[in-house]
Image 1 (tube, rainbow, N blue to C red):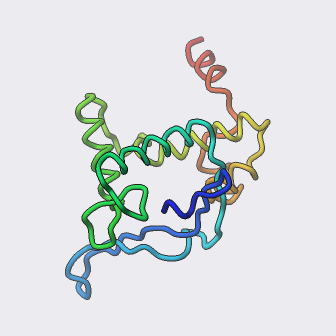
Image 2: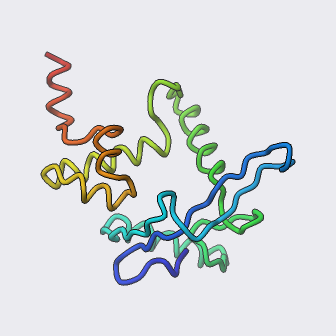
Length: 161
């Protein structure tokens, strides 16, 4: 939400849950809850790049007469784009670019997260705790599941040798 951006920080304290279809629930729906996946609020600094994106997004809202509390509003039950919207967009982009989507290779939103965690760890001299706080993982989860503390060029050169 726009109100979650203040003093050069993005406050992260909510998430959108996908409530799956079941015998008790005839239709899948999306619900915004007042906690994060691990129930820990966090802040994310607004970098120059993020500030540029937010400025352009705000101008898009203004030019199109969008008056919403959400950065990414939609005509949905809760007024915001759904998790599926993001995944489906990414899948369409991969298809249009002839990039195969495989279950054994991380692509999509998780690859962006993985790249972000890796970049923070590598650029901070191996500070997994910093990356964990920014991205909401425990240090143990980050070390176990993400490509951390490896120099991509060094790995590429090793593979090419």
